[in-house]
Image (cartoon, rainbow, N blue to C red; front, side, top):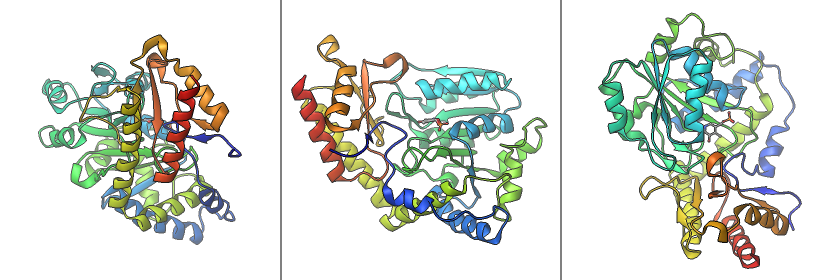
Length: 361
Ligand SMILES: *Cc1c(COP(=O)(O)O)cnc(C)c1O
């Protein structure tokens, strides 16, 4: 049996030994030429990954730092929080905690956010920003980002803030082509790195808006990021070990090829889908809106299938962790990740273990 519990939960996911090894390079000063070289090296790779000519920033925080920062930098009038699950719902809570005027666009958990729903709300003229979670990790729903982003042309004064924490690098997301204002993600999902680092890009319109907002703070000030980024530096001392890990993961991604990477995630996701069908489970997300990063399985067997027992038996017998459902859908669903460095072989191993565990129940 493996020496540690391998994570197939939708974040954090398993970190490969080569990534840990890359992270343990000797420390360097964050105002040194060595750091600037490291930063410049990852910068061009991040721009390729984000599909952008804008700067891409590294923030020493989990994704929520930049999520909160986006609100503090960009919301002046009122923000529309598109809510369809635990993470997107939380955006509304955080907007209010930041003292922002906010409203929810709410659909039932398991349903996607559509462009038509957003267009109707924005047409009121009340809003100068919106938040959207591309891949709602709690429900496994992928909302139609391209259609939603197309609304930016009709509502140019609305800041489109998009959380791609659990979709980024599993499907193509091109910042410049989408024309959105903030694209943010985190290290512990498909990047397959330890938690603690967020990555983001912002539009010219976003910097212009931020410049008009007085109380945007310091640590997450987009304009500080931009100013420092221009000399290949960060506003404060960053998590340099994680940046070493990022450089390593970026090299792996570009060596694999981005299209190959997206195709691999689709194939591994399809393996989980086949397992779901084989055992006559259902999907929590509707057809056409299912994540390629994880699968949220609907427990359609009710009391006849004890999700908590399934999860704990899998862990005991195989040292593998899946998730027993998030928040109010705990026990009614369970989630299996296929993000990061996984391969057909490692997913086949997981699936065999899932089969073995079911057979004992
Ligand atoms: C994991 C996740 C987050 C949370 O990020 P932290 O790293 O915990 O700050 C935010 N949004 C989505 C969609 C996520 O999946």
